[in-house]
Image 1 (tube, one colour):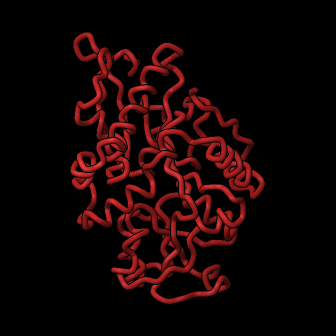
Image 2: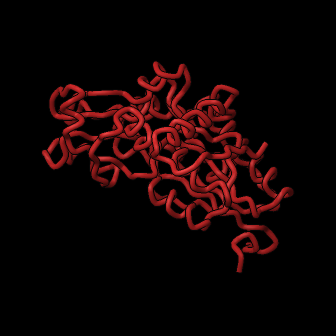
Length: 286
């Protein structure tokens, strides 16, 4: 049976997948809590790490999923970007950290632990340093691997961007800051995509419910943060709130013209650098 034909009684089931992180949990709170009345649609939430979600999207398994903007380059035949749900680094983003300061030459010669080759963090790293030597490991093991000497440098995403100092590590480069200096644009990291075969009738309805979920969380911040703290991996509430504010904000409700331009430029730079195999047609479900 095609997944778009699944139903719960007389309600169409739409699977929505995102990472088990406080920012994504905050974003989807309105839907997950039932605060948003979805009428004829029943949303089922699936939580996995971003690399796993990227891979499942490659197989076309999910109706709606969070993906890396880097991964979207390989998904355009099956998925279209929703006009909301973006995670953008506004002069900040994935960070390179180590046990001690290193200059650029030493970083180039080092082994960098990364959270996956389809992540936007990896694409940003390769744009910053094409000769970077990398190994892949789960994102939540990278700080420990660097601290314990199993990797020279770590490429940190999610809450680790704020907590690397607690592990005794130092900042080498903030790739979001570098990108802002290079382009004047935010760094596009993640987005929500919807499968094209849902069709012209269903896509706008699903999109509206997801937009309303984001708006509800932003309008009911304390309530949504109570929920998001269940995904904060032991962070203090103040730190978790800071992290959520970095990646769920008005930009998440709407990319804006510069946000859309940033997505296109990020992927164009990937093509120019030979990291992406062919030009990407960026399309939004407006």
